Image 1 (spheres, rainbow, N blue to C red):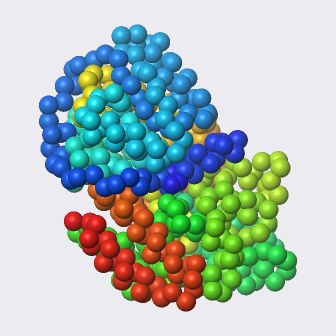
Image 2 (cartoon, rainbow, N blue to C red):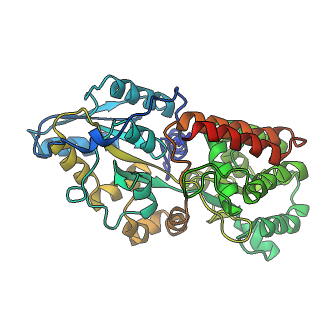
Image 3 (cartoon, helix red, strand yellow):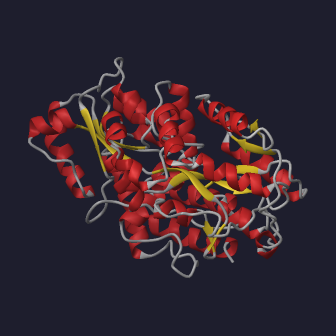
Length: 437
C-alpha cells in the first residue's frame, strides 16, 4: 500500500509516522479502471508564465514539516500562495480524490503527490501536464525515481521521495556464528540453519504476505530477483516464465519448510516489524522506516541488527521501487507558480530537511553520501544501492486491477501450499493479458 504506500518511508521516531511511510512505499489504488484516452492534451497548451495562488494535495502530513516549508514559501512569495489540501492517510482514498477531480476536469488540485504506481494511469488519461526538460531539471536525481515519473519517454511528474526494500538481520547472532550477511536465498537459508538451532522460538525470515499491496511488492521482488519479470520490455505479460515461477516457488517453499513462519501469511509491514523487534525472526524484508523504530531504546534488537540489500536467487535481489512525485494537473491554472514551487521544494536543503524531520528518502543521489545524514541514518548507503537496483511495479493504466490480480495469484500458493505456482502464474498470465493492452 505504496502500502504502500506507502504514502512512504525513512524513519520517524513515532510509530504512526513509520506506518505512514510504509504505506507510501507500497501503495495502490483499487478503483475501477478508467477509460483510456490520449495524453497528448496534457502535453500542449501549458502556460508556464501564468502565476498566482495554487493548491497542493497529498496525504496526511504527520510530521508537520510540510506545513512549515509551505509557510516559508508563502512568506517569501506573497503573490503566489500555496494552500495545502491534506487528504486521507489511506493511499486508495488519496487516489480516489485525485481521480474524482480529474474526471470532472477540475483544476482544484494544482499539484498532487502522485504515487509511483499511479503515473501511467494519470498520464495516459491526460490528467497530468507533461513537464518540459528546460523547466524541470532532473540532473542528479535518482534514475529509478525519474523513470517512475516517466510515461512513454515523457516526464509527467517530478520525483519528490523515493524508497527501496532492505534486509534487516540480527548482526549479533550472525557474528556469534561467524556468518556474513547473505546475498542469496541459499546463503540466507544456510545462515538460518547455523544460527537457529540455538535460538528457541525464532524463525528464519519474514516479509509482507497478507493479500494487499505489500504482497505485490514482495512477489515482484521474488520474481525479479530470480531473473524474471511481470512484464517484458515490450510491456506484455511474462509472468509465467520459468524464472517467475522460480520466484513464487521460493516463497511457497519458505512456508512449506517453515523458513517463513505460518503466521506470516497475515503480516503487513507493522506485524513483520514487530516480529523482528521481538526476536521472532532472524531476517526481515521491510522498508527503511523500520530502522529508527528498531533502534529505539525500548526495542529488544536495538544495537543488535544491521541492514543489507535484499537477497536474490544467485546474488543481491531486486527491490520494488517506492516513492512519490509532484504532478501538475492538466486542468489547473497558475502552472508557472506550480513549476517554481516544485523546483523550490526539490532544492537540496529542502530534501535534506525532509529526511531529517519527516523521514522522507531524498531523490537527489548526492544526499545519500552526505556525512551529516549518513551519521544519523546509517542505512542510507545501503538504501541507495537498493533504489539503484530497484524495479517499478507494472506500468499499467489499469494498475488497480493489475495489482489485485497479482495478489490473488501470489496469495493462493502461499496460503495453500498444495497450489501449484506454475498453475497460479499461468492463470495470472491470462488475466494480465486481458488487463494490459
